[in-house]
Length: 366
Image 1 (cartoon, one colour):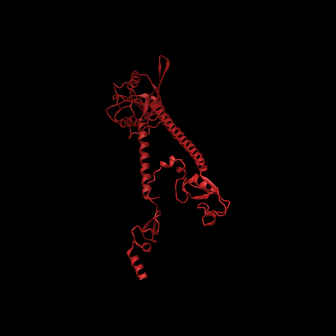
Image 2: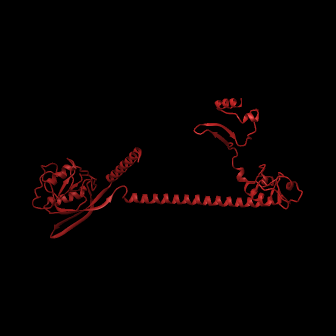
């Protein structure tokens, strides 16, 4: 594996890891918050999926008696006093957002022995929550709840009510997991699939139609060609005919003509065996000797052939010396005995682009 390939793979892995990290940052888990307390000799329980786990919190379950920090509802710093923590193990700290970082609040409660930390949002935020980050306070369950829910529990605790709280993981949420995105992706997938299928059907139908049209055209052309070929002059050679007495031969099968052979005379007056020339004309249309388009002369036009450009460059033969460059080029449609420069044909056979070769040739003839 080359160095460029290794660097490309490394770059791809880094990009993928960045995407995964970015996607994870957008995702969050809700928390199920259950509270129980005794009111008039009866136990009241409330249940809601109204919390959000912190970004650095483990998605574990936690339970305990709710405890407020004495004097400072924000629970900032090590001076926060959780006076009831020794009487109610395990316990959960309930603190208000603000005045310090989330990490400082969580660490302060953790140092006092809290089993979990619940942060309720600031005043005026209603039941809104946020996906709080606390990178310096890990290893403890930490969630955020709305201000209304938090103040409701704070009032009961301040009134001397023992509130038991149970925290459990809810459902994951994020741009790729929300119902809106799922619907959007489903519709997009359906549209792309339908468009791809429609395009495939259209292309397949077009190809089948073109192929069918081509076959019909070829079949029609072949039928017309057979009818046209049938109009050509056909005769049987006899002894004494010029073709049987001379060295004439069929240019298709390269065999001499004999008495009794059935031959076809083309519009260009060239003669060939009937069994040889008819398949030839169906495939190639032209006379093997003069290249005259026989079917065209008989009124059969090949539309497909007429649409093909005939302005292709002439084929050439390139003469090379092993290990060297081309010396000269000779067009195939030009006779080797033709001298376009007006010089002697024998002289033309000894022309070289390399003047050193020409000098050696002159010396050899001298």
